[in-house]
Length: 72
Image 1 (cartoon, helix red, strand yellow):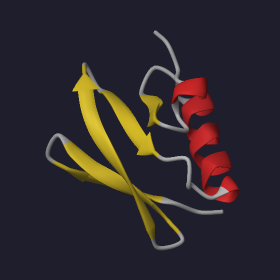
Image 2 (cartoon, helix red, strand yellow; image 1 turned 45 degrees about the vertical axis):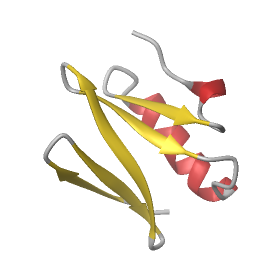
Image 3 (cartoon, helix red, strand yellow; image 1 turned 60 degrees about the horizontal axis):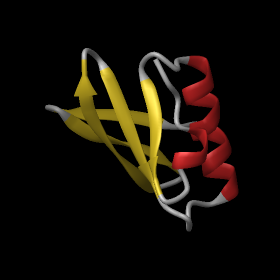
Image 4 (cartoon, one colour; image 1 turned 60 degrees about the vertical axis):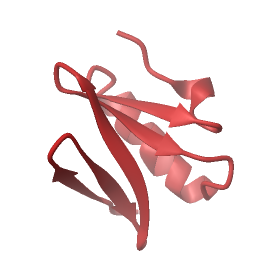
């Protein structure tokens, strides 16, 4: 599944199949991706893969994100 990352200043979003997941700049080039318990499993797999590929840059936050939040 493809996705698009849109940066808008210190934030933006990741778009997957027309659904947007807000991102927020945390510090030093790190971003939080906000997800909820309602995030579709397919979208969650894409986001998990992004975090796994670049854990120094991305982390999941929110109701469904806390279990796979990346650490420095």
